[in-house]
Each structure stands twice: as C-alpha cells, then as structure tokens.
Amino acid sequence: MHSLLDTLMVLLVFTNLRILGLSRINASIRTVAAQGVLLGLVALVANADHLTGRILLIAVAGIALKGIVFPVLLFRALRAVKIRREVEPFVGYIPSVLAGVAAFLVSLWVAARLPLPGRPPSDLIVPAALSTLFVGLLVIVSRKKALSQTLGYLVFENGVYAFGVGVAYEAPALVEMGILLDVFVAVFVMGIIVFHIAREFDSIDTTRLATLKE
Image (cartoon, rainbow, N blue to C red):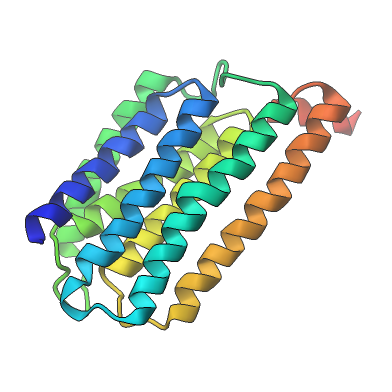
C-alpha cells in the first residue's frame, strides 16, 4: 500500500505540472477531473488500515464531485462561452511549470520540518499537498480567463483535500464534506458569472473587467 500511495502522490504532482503547462482549457478540465479521481483513491489507500464508512463516503463523494460533477459543469460553461485556449496568461507556461517544480522542492523542505500529530502513511503526502495548494494559487493569479481561475480554485481545494485525507484522518467528516459543498457552490456560482460575463462583454478575459470603471 505504501508504494501505491507514493505512486499516487507522484501522479498528483505530475497532474499539477500538466495543468500549469496546458493552454487548452478543455484539456485542463480533464486533468483536474483526473486529479479528483486520484485524490479519491488516495483517501482509500492512505486509510486502508482503518477504513470506515466515513472514509468511504469521503472518497466516493470526492470522486463523484471532483471527477464527474464539477467537470461536467465546467464543460457546460466552456461550451456556453465558446472559448478553447488561455491566450497570453500573466505568467507564461514554461515559467509556470518551472515554478511548479520549485514549489514541490520547497514543499519537500517545509514538510521535513512541519510538526505533525502523527507520521503520515507516505512521506510524499504533505509535499504533494502543499505544492498542490501553491499550484492552485498560481493558476488563480496567473490566468486571465475566469474558467481557468475556477480551475485554480479547484486545484487549491484539492491540496486541502489531499492534506486532510492523508494526514488529518481523525477530523470529523463534516469538515471534509463542508469543503466539498463550498467548492460545489463556488463552481456553480462561477459558472453563472462566466456565462453573464461572456454574454455582456463577448469575452471572459478578466482583465477587461476594468471597463466597468469607465
């Protein structure tokens, strides 16, 4: 189980780097969906020695929402606004990928010095979770399209989820389910916002919101 969990963590890091290097939004949505399925599996594998109904519920809910429901909502929004690529982001794709690699290396250093209540089932869980948090924030601040920023929010939450199911498995289920509910509402609201922005301005480039000041 330990080697399987390490493999899942390595795949999580690779999905982060893939998200940072993609310009096609539909491919980014699929990658975030795959990341959601990975995290559902992480919840099961990381807690295999003390598997409970609560953990099963968290894992199934994570896979269903992150791997199916959220991507479907985002693909519907993508079809509504009729865009395909993130053009000219604030931070280029190659620098973004390099920043993602640097974030993982820094996360390894931080994780080695971070006091934890117990030893995690894999030494890669905390670094992978912390680097996922950073990647989500980077996508939010470095992309111009509202849909891309929504994906960044989902990636950020995936980092919180990874840390929670991998390290803080004694936390009440209400915490994890509350996070999922918050993200569900956020994606739903963002879909409405994206639709109205595209209808009014013929673009979902968030830099054009400056025209509201005029």
